[in-house]
Length: 437
Image (cartoon, rainbow, N blue to C red; front, side, top):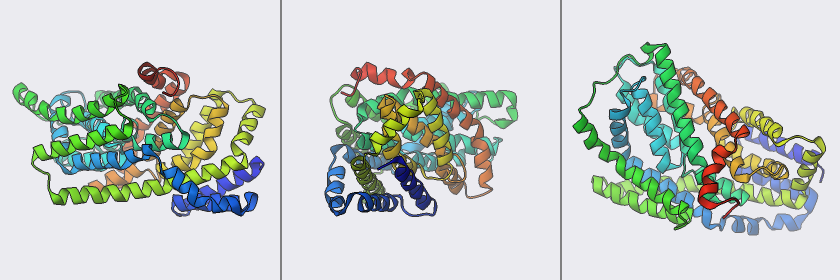
């Protein structure tokens, strides 16, 4: 099969997604169409075997566990305690409570693995804190929407699990690679707030009164459990004591004990957590199943080899190709939901990455950052709509304008990643050595 057929199939897939068809159905349709036209009934008949083989993956078991972990913390009352404790320490900074939005998003991201869940949760907790205070509405909304994108960059990240399963890349190395860029992006977001409020103090003119040190130290205890769960989960992975799936199970057990300690554990809470977990997991695994079958069909058709020859013929360097992909994903993210964008493009883009000998762990972090950008770029940025939905008043344009300065910081992070891969690769190489463990 030549590349023209692959390009036509890819464009058709994007077109079907744009008109609203479910991404899993689109990928299965394209894969079955390609198999029927070019390969014959034997490959079409292999659909069931491929779907079972692709989803019978121990790594994918981490998805429902991390979803459940986040649900338990949200519904168990941990989020309110995290926000209140952080506000005591971050409110004195230039920008006041705006920093609490970023800090709470970063800490919740370290135990939830989902940006949309982070936006909804922190938005629900944070917006009442700003009511009747003299803060710029756009900055408040923008800090929540942008800060919530950290949910898929700071591990544990569901997107990283899916990427690792689809590309046979170590999830442990991906998690380690996301830590430093996640912390850097958190600092850049806070820097935006400091500079903006230094230039225009009216953006955060009403800071909360200082809290006595004794009370701040007492509330600081509320940060220990979620931070302890993060260390328990990630530490067991980095030290080689547990796989990501096993570490996620330990995190769920710790979350159950924490919710029990808070006195909010009940049959009703567990039912709501389990129901949401099943719904989210079913949606994700269905999409992954379609993508894995599409990967199989493309491999049989020889598309990866054709793409490798194409890259060799045009003579593009890895840096040049990454800037091309940067623009490609930036445009695509304006029109596609992030999971659809990531899973739909991996079968086509990943062979290019391998042909250029780009580290798959580094590319995973690059792709996750591009998904972060897609979460706050209109017209389909999910975090924009989630924050506006929590707000329930005014115009969504306030959220879009508020995220603009944070977008530029994300652009800066992408440029730094492209020219300094060590930002992402230093910690995994330190923790696991070079190459996949």
